[in-house]
Image 1 (tube, each protein chain N blue to C red):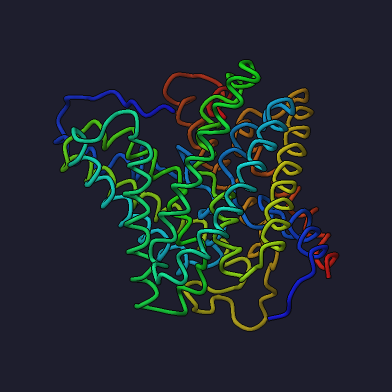
Image 2: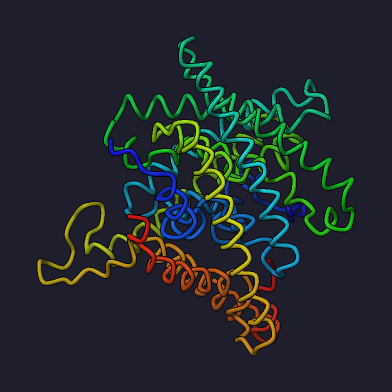
Length: 224
Length: 193
C-alpha cells in the first residue's frame, strides 16, 4: 500500500493539508480504489450514495480518533484485532442510528451498513495513518478521506441514477419520454460507471503529464 | 417468507446471485489478485474455507446471542470469530506452501476484511436461513467467488498479451472486463427458480 506520502513543509498549514489530501489528491475511490464493495453495491441512486458516504465518514473519523488516542496503549501483536473491534463498535452505533432516523433508508442500504466494518478504507486509514499520528491530525485526515469517499460515491451514484432512472435525487430530469437505461442501475452498470470514471481520470492525468514533461500516455496508470 | 430449497440456494449463489458479480462482495481481492489464475484460484479456495467457518460460527453465535438479548453485539462477535479463522488459515498456508503464502501476500490476512466473509454471516442472518441452508449458502457463495476470480484472472491473462491503449491499462480495464462478465452472469437470472 502506498500510504506514505512525502511530508512537505511548504506554505499550507499541515492540518489543512491532512484534510484536503483525501478529497482530491488521494481520493479513496478514484485514486486509491479502496472500499469497493459499498462503492458499487449501494450507488444505485444519489441519495443512497450520500447517506452511505456520510455513515462511512462518521465511522472513519470516530474510529481513527479513538485509535489515535489509544495508539500507545495497544500492543503491537493484537493491533489489527483491536482496530476491528473499535470499528465494529462505531458501525453498530451508526446502524442503530440510521434505523432510528429512517427505516426506509435502512432497508435500502440493508446489510451494506454493517459491511462498513469490512471496508478496507477504514482499517487501512487506522493502520496507515491513525496509528502513527496525534488525534487531531488523524481525525482531520479521516474526515477528509470520508468526504472524498462521499464525493466519489455520489459521482458514481449520480451518473447511475441519471442514466438508469432519468432522475437525480428523485427529481425527474428528462420528462416522461425518457427511456431509462436500466442496465445502469443493475450490477453491471456499477462496474461500467466506475470504470468510465477511472478512464476519464486516467486520460486527464495522461494529458497533464504530457503537458508537464512531454511523456506519452503510457505509464500514467500502471498499477494493480 | 417462502423457504428456498437447498438446490435453489446453491444455484442462485453460484450463478445469478454471484457474490462478486451481482452483490459486489469481495471486490478488493477481485481487483487485486486476479492477474494470474495460479494465484486467484488458491485464494478463492482459502476464502471459501473461511466463509464456511464464518457461516457455521455465525449460526451458532446467533443461537447464543438471541436468547440472551445481546443482538447488538452480533457484528462485533462475527468479526472477531472471522479474524480468528483467518489467522488459522494463514498459519496453515504458511506451513503447507510458503511459495503460495508469498504470492498471496497482504491479501491473505485481508480476507478478514473481505466483505464476502462478513456478508455471508450477515445475509444468512437477515434471511433467517436454518442450519443446512446457511451451510449451502456459504459453500455456494465460496464456489461462486472462486469461479468469478478464476474467470476474471483468465480473461486478464489473455488481455495482457494483447495491445491495449495506454490509458485503459490498470483498474479501468479490469472494471470494464468485470462489467462484461457481470452482464453475462445476469443471463442466468431466474435459473434457480
